[in-house]
Length: 266
Image (cartoon, one colour):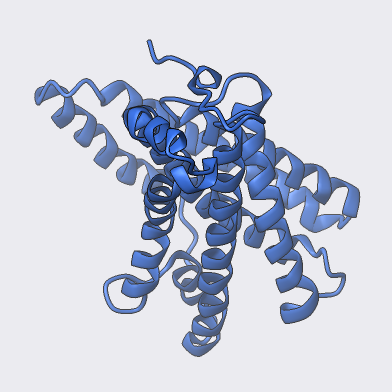
């Protein structure tokens, strides 16, 4: 099967849809047209840059360069997690909680898939390692960001209830049980919905890409099942870790609620 290459004119026609959407948003006075156009421009620039980087990596496979790219992806994802929270932890913690949780979950699950399940040679082959890690980080980032946002907002809103439970003798973890559960549910809901709709409502990205690339549909299905399970596990464990660390950070050693560790939105 011949792969149909897309040229600048083809992409330009697709870009007109974004321009039309931005014009409609401006007409509706939603104030999002600037953000929409900037996001579209970032998409083009970032994908072109990563395309050139991957071209070089594919031509010369070196573990050091792959590790550096993976580290850069992790740090950028950690920054995005921090930026998406209205009330985030002050100082290093605002960046470190999400980054540490993503590193623990996403890298562990990706290594498991590369070494045990897929088994490319070498195990860090960039054709497999970078796309897998990218999908893991992208989805885990979203789950963790949603969970932390929900946790900190609920802790602020329910601070009176939490203080009352502490006064009644509950431990910090016990006082936060309802908030923790809500935060974890919020973080896991998107990936659960994606799994429930996969193959019926939507054809996931990797499967679509493989089919467009000429791979047999059943091969694409096998890889997509693997990816969905990996993403779900990575997102789930990452969310659990992030919520657990954040809950501990909300209290001091004397089990006192410390909302002063969160920033105050302007």
